[in-house]
Length: 450
View 1 (cartoon, helix red, strand yellow):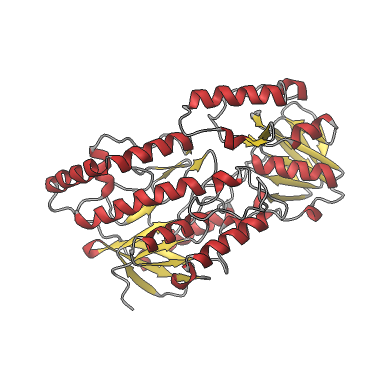
View 2 (view 1 turned 120 degrees about the vertical axis):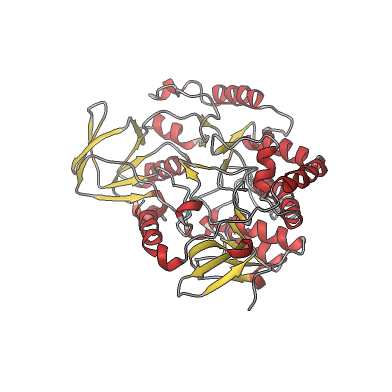
């Protein structure tokens, strides 16, 4: 089977399926693989039973494939799985998809092609690789001093309320998962304590009956969005200090927002106890930095995830903190054919955003066919800078994408000029799997551990 004229999509979650449909619509040959036994990514294997989206249905759905009208404003995890399965069925995406297919190693080889080694040893050659393996699987744990006699798990390992029933539960973190689990624990556990290293801005999921994400419009600059949301917070919750919480030391949107109404409600009812950061563990007790102590049976670390590509050689490990050092969201300036898709975190629903991005990406993919240099080098020479944050304002991104579509002919013209400057460009071939498997194994073990 000759795959050298195809692209390979790694991952069949929300982003992977969107990119598959975009390539299919553009008649670009591709294969798709996923390590799981079904599609859906994090919505299939990662979220807890009672999870609901935090962005609204309107901004989360694909514009060209709306969610069913009977879905609520904030669909459940099961509804999201059903939606993604319906999307895949409607566009017949399973015909190019292989499940239970793990990738062990990806490397650049001669003639600007890419060699992929799968678990079990099979190797294939592809024209390009789309990395859509997501960023909600490589668990990040905090460094906790001392020993704890109870159970410590990551929020990804929390699946259902029965795990909390009758227990004294500590949740570490201030993000959306942490707050959802703390609220769940408030309902079914003996004790629910939420430990936050620093206070977060709690944003209500709705205001005046309208999902808060739906109130943000494409034309709004970030300063205006911040002013509007600050007013919504004040009118809905008042001051954070009224709940025994410190005022956040960062501006709204400088960190990923936490949309949650329940935590502050349960704090007022004494069902959630807010605490500062953990200082140390001691048998069945946890001491916090304010020197207060509480006894627990279970600690849940809702402390996020690392962006990770354990199947890439060191040369292609472009992750710094939570940021992938690439141009225009996906492209390298020194290798062509390898694309880091949607590694960042958009503030808002992903469906409408990935649909807008996918059409631009397809245009860039077709342009790459016409030039020898990497598309990333073209964007670099146009003056684009490497990203400084993994967070993005979706409204600003929409405006940038619209401009990119509008002036794509200028991008293509610049690409021709840059291509002429580097007539001898070629990807640098990297060492084969056998020479790197110890390194790859180490990366994989680290990914599993964290």
